[in-house]
Amino acid sequence: MGIVYKHLSMEDRCLIQVQLALGFRPATIALVLRRARSTVVREMRRNGWSANNGKPGSGCPYGAGYYAGAAHRRAEELERKPRVERRLVVGNVLWRCVVGHLRQGLSPAQIAVTLARMPDPVRLSHETIYTALYAMPRGQLRARVLTLLRRSHKQRGARSGRVPHPFTDTMTMIDQGPSEVDERLVPGHWEGDLIKGRLNQSRVGTLVERTTLFVALVKLEDGRAETTANGFASIMNRFQAPMRRSLTYDQGREMAQHSLLSRQANLKVYFAHPRSPWERGINENTNGLLRQYLPKGQDLSVFSQQQLDEIAMLLNARPRKTLGWKAPAELFLPQGDFDFVKYWSNGIKSVALRP
Image (cartoon, rainbow, N blue to C red):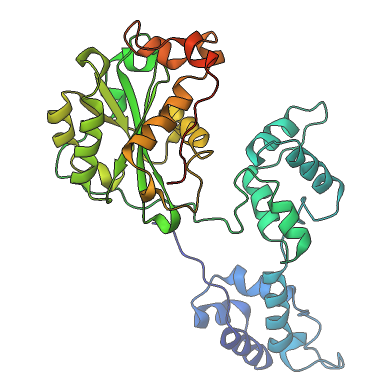
């Protein structure tokens, strides 16, 4: 462990002034303070001390020009003042550029990359952008600017993640799984997550197959791990065994009973690394699409399993560009179970989204 530096206090500075007045040398003062001689000398020089001040006729016999009160006030002012002026200030050219990019739909991270790739590059961290946005005083201007962010949060949450739940069963990490999971060449490998409702008091399980993008939703009565395992297993057992090879999940507490899910659905359960949502990127994107039907702030417990199945079908019937404009249901379901032309010829089916 390195040496921890402690700033001089008001008492230290008073002692320096008194001992200078008594004619003590800097080395002696440093010995009394248990400080380095250079620390004392720098403190004296930056606060008006001069070797000539204490001489007869100098007009400054007391403390040789060093005054503890003035030195301490100066130190406090310098402590509050940033050493480097902020580059991103409301109203300057860079600020207007950042806000312009926000209006075009870029995130702070994308803005930072974009500015760095310009012919006249600007090195700006996305954290600097977030800090400048949320440091704005409350008012209409701040509210308008924050609405330009993707999620329009009024406050920024803490960056440190919580400690993962200590599972009783050993977790198998995603990088220990077979390569076919990452390559997305073989169907049957799923990603899972939860969508939460108002005040985090209701939840719906989400499942998406990595190769075909087929979506399944799970009604959950509560957030207990056993309920989650049973609910996910019940939905997964709807599908044939070759179509349920593995499930990749985050390290949320709701998956503490993953061994129960593995036994009931006869599949492998892999876990993503903490704070690594890109390892389940397909599921994260699907959750965003589902928010059209399961909006934030709504009580999700009012949806029945049948209604959730109908919502999932709305996504599974959509033609997707990444699938060559095929629908997930065409690629996932057994041949003949889904007729794309017949489905869309009948028009969009009515779905009771609000019971």
